[in-house]
Structures are given as structure tokens and as C-alpha cells.
Image 1 (tube, rainbow, N blue to C red):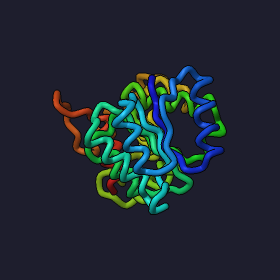
Image 2 (cartoon, one colour):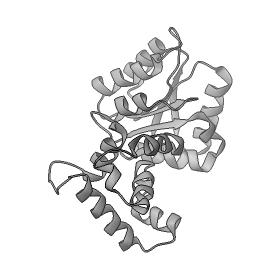
Image 3 (cartoon, rainbow, N blue to C red):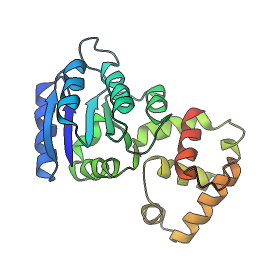
Image 4 (cartoon, helix red, strand yellow):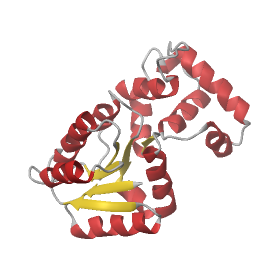
Length: 214
């Protein structure tokens, strides 16, 4: 997998490159500001972009804006954004149009190097990864919603783990239950959220987007 890194802090940028290289990821470019990130992507056409949300020149959401622009012009490029803060709106913007191959992690997750590398791989192969703190914020906000509010406590936990990008097998291990029980919970979640089977839509992803949008 070929990756371009967008990060204005030199130490973080070099650290990310080292971690990824040791994990067998090919870092083909890096950038210290949003404009340079866009140019690097145009030049290198990577499989994935890993970028900080806050970058020069505006030191606001320039990295996120660059990521959304990359998503529009290079739809096959996976996007993983990093942030020091939990921002619900950022997650919604990233996932709104194409949740597949998208991730939003807090920078502190990089300290768990094996876990971070697993998340990078998951996003790279088309998965969706959300930081547990983002998911926790969504749970708190969703408590009074009509559809989400009807979920049982166990179903909420299962949906939270789905939103983190966990597979059914991983959820089963986390909760100490059978995988078929996870499948049953997931089916009930779809029913409560009004998500019927469809050949055109991925209900697992739609459930996460519904969850975030409340």
C-alpha cells in the first residue's frame, strides 16, 4: 500500500513515516501544508492519504478540506484523518458521501502502534474506522433519538463497535458472546433504524452514518 502523509509537525510526520514503513507500508510522499498535500497526491497517486485535520496555511480544518477535495478527485484513494479533538461534524463530512475506505482517529491512538497499523490496514482495504472517543460522543448525543433511542443497551454497544470498524468476529470476542448473537443484534439494529435489505446499499455503513448524523 502506497501512502502520502499530511502533517505540519516534523517530528510527528517523521514518526508516522517510521511506524508505517516498519509495518510494511510504502510512504511515497509527505507534506507540511494542505497545498503541498494536494500536489503530492496529484504527483504520487497514492492508495491512501493520512492527514492531520488542522494544517497550514489556515491552521483550522485545512487538512480536512484537502482530504475532501482528494476524495472528490480521487475517489479510490482511502482517507484517514488524525486529530487532537473530537469533532462530530468532521466525522459526518468524511462519511457522508462514501464511508468505505475512511477513518477518523485521535492522534493519541498512534501510541498503540499495533492497533494503529491495524486501523490503517482496515481503512486501506475499504473499511471504516472511527475513534472510540468519537463513538462515545455520538452515543451520548443519540440517546434521545426516536430510532436510536429504541435500541437496547447491548445493541448500542454493538453499534458502537461497528462504528469503530470492528468485524462481527471481533465484536463477539470483545463482548464474550457468540458471533451468531452479534449477527442477531445487528439484524435487530437494522430493523430499529428502518434499514431494509438492498442490493444497492451497505446496511452496516448506513447504520454508522445514521448513528453519526443524529
